[in-house]
Length: 73
Image (cartoon, rainbow, N blue to C red; front, side, top):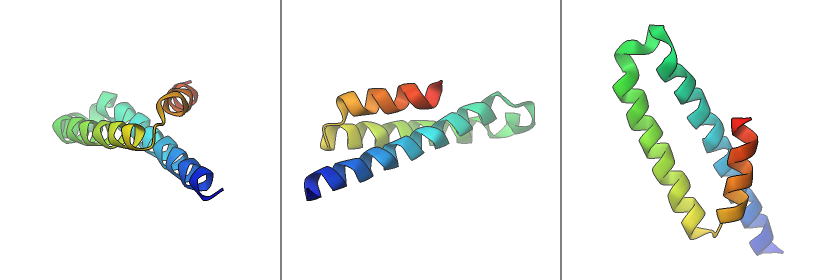
C-alpha cells in the first residue's frame, strides 16, 4: 500500500513539473520575455533532468508518457 501511495505522489509531482515545463515553453515564445530566453531554456533543461531522474528512479516509464501526453494536449 505504501509503495503505491509513494509512486502516485511521485507521478503527481511529475505531472506538476510537466505543467511548469509547458508554461516555460509558452514564455520562451512570448515577445516580452525575449531577454530571458536563455534563463527559460536553462529552467527547461533543469526540469527535463529532474523528470528524467524521477522517471528512472521510480520506474515511471509508462506512467510518465501517459502524464506527458495528457499535459501536452
